[in-house]
Image (cartoon, rainbow, N blue to C red):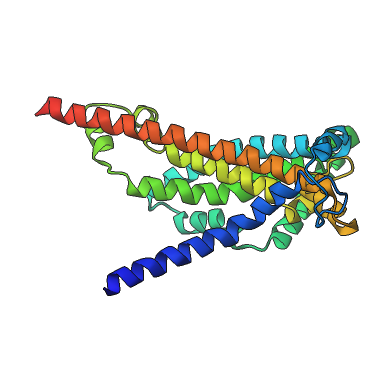
Length: 289
């Protein structure tokens, strides 16, 4: 009897938790089709603000910049995070391993204000050294803009992706890698043929996490962006301070649709891949018996 009551209690708490998370998003999507200029007053169904958004070059430019930075920085963070996670999970103890693990995890626990300020000071110092050694033209490539934001987002995303990859590698059974090593396979081939396919779902999850963190970041971007390189969060923040705009609901709805489609598609592909790998492993075990 207690088990039934607990089950209903957990279901109720789960429903309330999901409602708290998703009802605001549903309301936002509904009001993106509001005909009224007042975002909190329903004026009838209309798609006029979608057309208005498509004509706003400032928003479109900021959205395109944010998407490019999110994609590039997430790819770079996945590459670096995979290498760092592999070193921490497989090598485990090496000279400086404790310091390395701490440095990799530092961006997760460091306040964004400190991270942004420290990176800005580093970029200014490097730019000053380049300017003194090679002149203004050589130092211009480090002006605050796409490159500096990319470096900041890559640093932030890499820390989270490293944790995801490392956790996945720690869960893997190393017997497959050891068997391949006994058969004479080199470490690089073992990584590409065995390890990488097994951690592919974690890499995809890390990439999505990196895209989300990059698109969401405001504080670090504010330190590292320059004239003409305002990202979408910066633009939204500046517009919201002046008053709510119906175009913001439309923009948020489009972002929800894009992110939701990516998450559902990747989850579907990963589930299919996992099921196929499980099937192949079962067939291989049956063949060996």
